Amino acid sequence: MLSLVSEATKICPKCKEEKLLLEFGKDKTKKLGVSSYCSVCAAENRLKNYRKDSNEEKKKLKSYYAKNKAAFRNYSLKALYGLSSEQFEAMKIGQNHACKICQTHESNLKRGLFVDHCHETGRVRGLLCQSCNTMLGSAKDSTLVLQAGVAYLLGKT
Image (cartoon, rainbow, N blue to C red; front, side):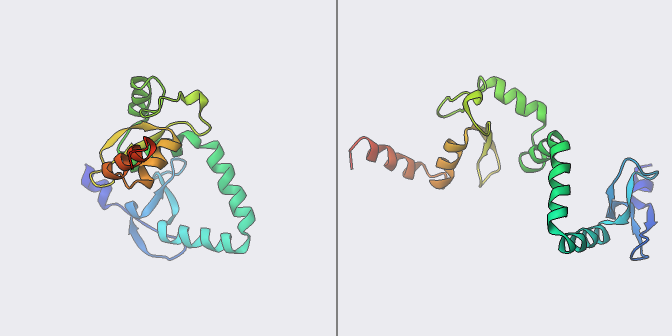
């Protein structure tokens, strides 16, 4: 049954090409569950509209984002770190809703907690405040750089 769905096609009304349903964006309001136009044509149309009136398009995107903030957050967590929103919440509870390094509670943070991960392996290490996350990034995740920084602060260099 699954192979029939992946092989199903539809004709894009703009480019007039028959394409796999996988080449169309998702749209739950449509009968087939996909948008009218293929992803390529939809992207071209968005770019055309953006060039015509970028301020209006920015307003639309900002409004859409504001209405769908949780969905964007969930998508980003999954796409970037492989985390579900439930796993993210469990991590926050496990860390008492505080940065894993400086222990600042998320209620005292302007932007909440960020997912920290190893850039080499992609492994999630924990949740950090923006300052601690930036510190690690600025040090390029190097323990040698961070140890040298500690030595400097202690006046040992």
